[in-house]
Image 1 (cartoon, helix red, strand yellow):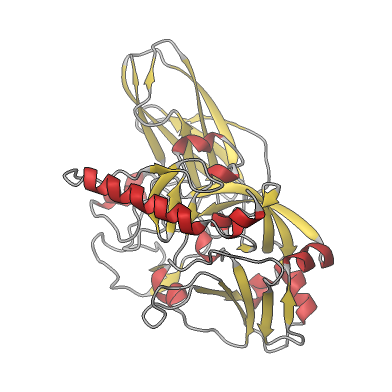
Image 2 (image 1 turned 90 degrees about the horizontal axis):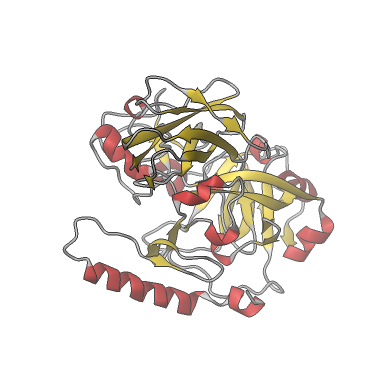
Length: 405
């Protein structure tokens, strides 16, 4: 994409997307379930378009046969409808302020030329990924966008350590938290708060957090946060602020809607409540991801010829401890067989796995996949998973039904 189209593309593309969405809804007004259209936004292949303002694009399940998710097939999730349609790198600055010795105003060129570059392969997953499956677990749907498994991906992120930026600014002794904010804004600021996230100073000063300017060897795609986004490996993506423009060092915790209300789960051991309990519970922010595996192939309802040798494939990940093994069941979870783990790209990345299955028997078959982390955390069965009203952190064993003919 050219520089001009990258910086000023949203106007026409979103209008086109909106037209397609409206046409789809009108045509399917009598249908019980809305099927998102496949729309190709700039820098993207056609993806399921749940919304175009703000952009919500879901990747296809079949992409999860790859350790690294291509940029043009990577999911998109924004929170606010007011996204800049023009970013001039000559004037864009990342501002560092608050309880620091020296306030900073850094250009993207400053980050590339004045700091040590680092790369890390890490999964980016929406806190509500796989949310629609809660309806089958607790017999109750949850609030929020009813994502399938496609609100996740894995990329190699390149940028600057957050701790190096904070070291250059000089963190004052009273610093306790670090707040981050991007350029997306609410349509009605007086009614909706800005998208603000924060973390403890110790987390901000750990070595794994990166202010990224590149993704899989290219500048960040516009819809994935160009020109900068925060990368917090092992954490859900709600804190991976896009179009990062402000870093504020704070002497105390700042209450905020998205930390204390929106992206929260029950503050108890199971992080769950009785299905249907709505939000009538004490809350805590979601943070670290749960151990999880997803089947990329075969996809649901695939028709397979009897006698075929099927290479079942998928990916697994956790909060950054690493995947020990992934198991497959073909008998409803009564017995489990080991898969072959593929190349290890790091503890925060997708770990691809494969399993060879001889499809000898005609009929309907259910393939189940379960991951186990290096610290012994086991992906739960669907009936074992806890329910929460926000529909966050779903990580039950994945199951795909296929037909052998």
